Length: 337
Image (cartoon, rainbow, N blue to C red; front, side, top):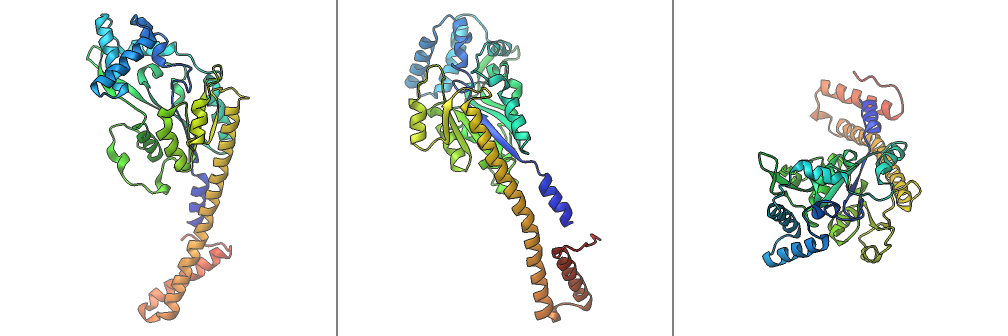
């Protein structure tokens, strides 16, 4: 039985999660800016100014404001927005250098070190647009804002509006393996040994202050947070501040190519997680023998100091158990029967 337990420990899947913001993390601009806002005959700067004004004047969440404004604008222009249109918009979204083959490259590197990587999006952007992008199939889950649709498929009302504070719930969902947004079991207590992915095996990649809650949560639980900046504009003030405030483990340009600094950091993180997982595995195996020894000593104590508590049959079983445990600890063959 102990051999089976050891084998199970050695074969346990060792997972890590890489969670990404989308806009200005994987893509150089807000996803709505490429074709969606221009198709409604409005300048993107004007759109965001009006959206922010709407939020301030009505004490609205900023994400609910832009989602509401998008529907209002489309109705005013008599252009019904359907899910399929959002998916089409996603095809035009630009990505930073190296993003398209980043996921397979990271997966292969981690696999050689015994680690299975899962990729997740946690974004305030629109899920339907991300689902239309070239990289949608690289993610185990896409957590992002989304619309409720009418029976004929027209966007009517926000179904999910993800902002910088409620992003953190998805870290807990991923860690616990409770993936559906409506599943309230995410609030249930769970021991570290029961987690689907340990918190220390998380990486969060983002670009701005809106990512702070997730960065802080992941880093506080032993994981890694990485801040990225546009490699062309090279404006680094945000990542400097985030690092100085203790929010980041690393910061670098949003260059996802094979020889980039970001890839180097990820390799370092994967190596460290693999080493920690190997240590954890060996300690769990060592704990099996230590637990057997502890049980053997307890049984010897009962047999020697309180023999009257045991019947003759129980004494024999106790002595047999002690012998088998001693033989196992001494490396002798022990029958499982």
